[in-house]
Image (cartoon, rainbow, N blue to C red; front, top):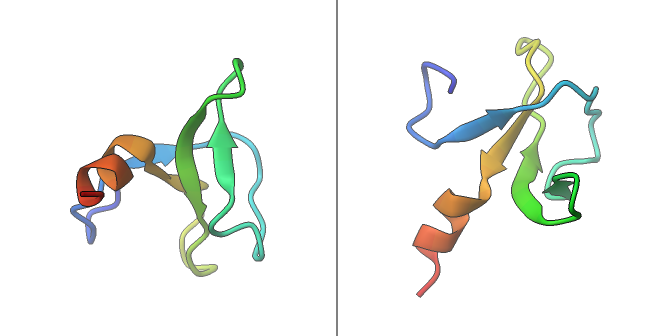
Length: 59
């Protein structure tokens, strides 16, 4: 999880590019486990927001 964020993130090995933000991150069973969050170039890590965090925000 990035130091400047309280949101739980998933670090991804696959290279993510600009324009992928908001897309689903799938596991091997095609289940959504996160939503791609590609931040600026200063972050060398590939990150997605954990789907559990998003479920917690829904009513």
